Image (cartoon, rainbow, N blue to C red; front, side):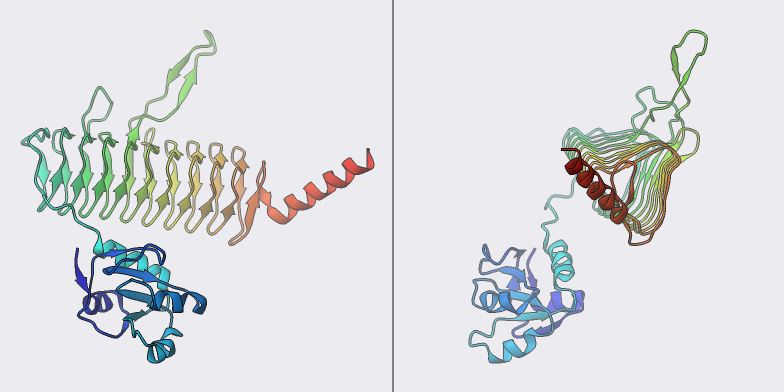
Length: 343
């Protein structure tokens, strides 16, 4: 999409230095900038190169004001207290909405489905009965939404407005998505949880009922090929603003709070609770009924045993079982010294 710098500055809350009528169409790095690109810098060392680059304009901190006045090229600058964040928001504003917002002829959309305004539904997408999709939402090709397929609990799926559901995503019945939710390709939402009861006489396993719901609140993003199970009897819930990387598994009855960040290949077992503002590194493994309290940080490949409580806002935990990183590093140093003594 084409936007003037004046329009961007107003919507992004920036102070504009220079010609506001200049058009930009895309964002790019300093090295790949073209004549209609918007770039950003965060320090003075980059600013001179940015001003003399091919970019149409630069997002920069307050110190760029003086450099602008002294610049020969006087390239337009958007002054922002958080250039990287402003750049990310500008990228969303400039993203191509995809042109045709129609329902593809090969898509299967039953008469009972409620489709909002300006919704795009791609080729071979399949919607179940009574599915609801909000305004401006995009459903890509091959997506399957709310088709029972023998699953217990046939509640219809509800998807909010301005969502993006990428190719080949599967959303089971009993799933609710809020507004502005992004689900990347291949993800599976609302599948049956891994819960079984063992017959003490025969030793065989039988599935415990998996008939609960999955609720995903506003502004959540779920990475490619991630899986989120519905609740067994109650619900699995992912709260507002949480971001989940690719190849993450969230088990049944898990509750994830607001603004949580979870990196790739992490697994959260059933009934785990992750409170607000937690950061979880890659390949973290959590057993069932774990609680990770608000603001804790789990380093990559940490392990959390059953019913363990992780507490400490801003504290980094590492190792298996996970403990504060200072404690963990002391243990490693002790082991290293002991090994040298034994040689």
